Amino acid sequence: MRYELYYWIHIQGRGEFVRLALEEAGAEYVDIGRESGPGMGVEAIRNFLQDQSIEHLPYAPPFLKAGKLVIAHTANVLHFLGPRIGLAPKAEGPRLWAHQLQLTVTDFVKEVHDTHHPIANSLYYEDQKPEALRRTKLFLAERLPKYLGYFERVLKANGHGCTVGRSLSYVDLSMFQLIEGLRYAFPRNMKRAEPGYPGLVALRDKVAARPSTAAYLKSPRRLAFNDKGLFRQYPELDELQ
Image 1 (cartoon, rainbow, N blue to C red):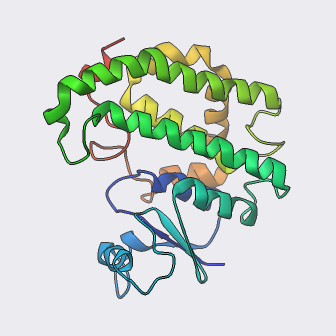
Image 2: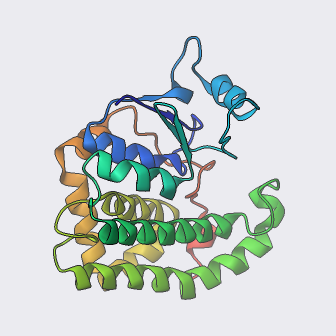
């Protein structure tokens, strides 16, 4: 199947978790926002979100079109895609476990985002900097080790060098993206923290070395982290711990 991914063009954002899965699987897909021509580009995304004739209208990107289906929310998209592109178990129990882990990733990503935007998305970081400093201090001291510790325990309990079952899943690709994003946003704190999570670091390296993912990471399709996305680098926040 030829999939259509709808996401904004200048950031990795939440769409990157889906894009990593599509790239690793070698799935045929079109990145609608980044293409030009009729029915493509950012205008196509905006038009889609305003189309009242669509029965299951998504609230916001990322969302995926698969034939007549429209699936929104990162974890939901991956829950749908995973078994179809060989990145999730087919049995219901393990498949739901993968979905549960991805929902926890969603929670974690939201907390990372809120370190630099703790008050409102409509405000600039500079407009909420005192609150961001306070929020980030607590995040680094309490929430970061709680989440990373949990995922480290999941890896250890599984015992196969991955989070779910015996082979790579979309959850493992999301673990890679989390570690990469955290390294970008908090390089000093992550350098200090990573020895405590050897399983996650090994998993990150394992994913990065896979041929399809490695080729994608070197390609122009992989956007760099920047100061518009989920993971942002503000040195004053990284100096808090």
